[in-house]
Length: 195
Image (cartoon, rainbow, N blue to C red; front, side, top):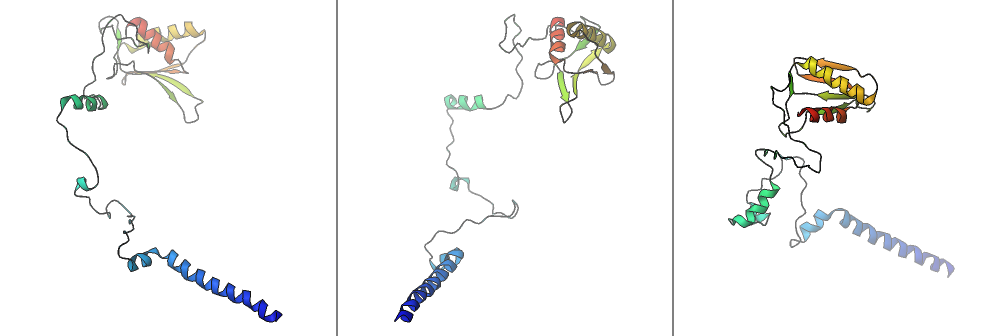
């Protein structure tokens, strides 16, 4: 009697394992299940690359949009678009919150001239090496006597910092480089000259 009772749970376990295996096989192959059930939705196929994917020809099938001709609605779209032409800044004696000052100097004021960038900003940049340990201040778009500009700018920076500073001039490119981070000092000096 004890032997018969001990066999009963084993047979239940065997039946359960056969049932689980058959259902796991069906779960591991969902395409086979979908082929049996025709009303089920198709599984989305993942394409390997852009070229092998299907071409979408009718955008109305994928996106909902409507075209408007109302100029009042178009104003909101124009605000989000970038400018085709950068507008000229106002030349007034007002102080801007960012500290921006428009250029007031003309090329004939000094023997040298520093032109603004296309965004009307001063062309002064801080270059760093990949580790960030070496800093170089670069001034570009220089015209005229670059040697006189370097001399005047270097004298101002040394007076402000109280120490000597190394510089490098690239006359043909119109570029001056100073060793260290002196971007703010250079911009202050250029602001006093009107560049």
